[in-house]
Amino acid sequence: MVPEFADAVTVDVFEPVLGGQEPSHVSTHSTLRRVAHRTDHAAAGDIANDELDTVRLRCLAENASAAHAATHMLALPLKARGTTLGVVARPTRRPLRA
Image (tube, rainbow, N blue to C red):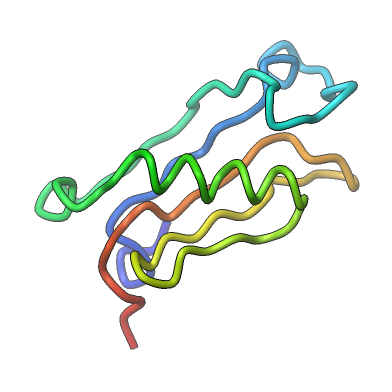
């Protein structure tokens, strides 16, 4: 993740992806596993997990990008060959830098 874009980023994938398989059924109840997390420790205290989980779930439910404008959180579906493999999230309360 580019530091100028985000103070933090998480990457969560569905369990079958960890075994080299595509998820057969994707839902908001499917189990996600965190495979990457990077944060600027100075901004780490800003992350609100409940709000981030809400944005992540909306992203997966709609299979499209989701954001929470008040907290500047952003989540995008992680896709390969048209299949959603998980979700990438920008969990920070700081606005995008110009």
